[in-house]
Image (cartoon, rainbow, N blue to C red; front, side, top):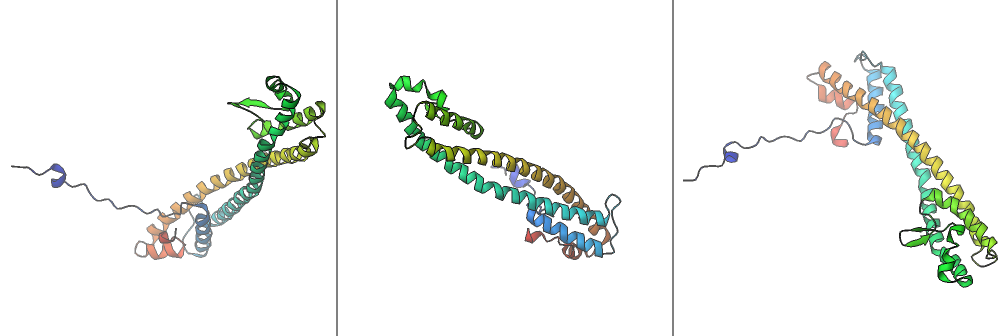
Length: 230
């Protein structure tokens, strides 16, 4: 006679998925913090021992500003990144003409001996300008100097072609580095204030529930806590 499996006799308890009280992303979190700060300032609910109402209002405003600044820094970097990608493709494609000039003047193996002078290095199986953009920006002036030294400067892909690309590339690499540093700073500030905002909002949720046990859900909505909207 078959006996029922233990799983059938003792089924696993059904657990309900717990919906977070706070938004996961920064945009709705900033909106919630601003709404909660205004509602708390106007309510009879007292301040927390470790956080005054005015301090939370300032914290919510600071978080919104840091979020906007971090987003703006990212937007500024996008056009730079796109243009650098375009330039990388252009440089990689047209370096072959410089190699062809060397091949015309020397045997193939002998021509490669001049590659370092032109800023060309071996990466994997390919001879090319360095992939790393900071190193590529340093290699391009070497290419310009070598074109002139080998009398390739007057050719179609001589200095007239490479000079503006070299100048633009160096400027964009520097701007991208500066913007990345600014964005890192702004993101760091946003992350720090976000932790403080989340801590304060969680405390405010507990305070509302403790002070209004019968009408907590309605009070939470008044303060902007609407889980279905996140």
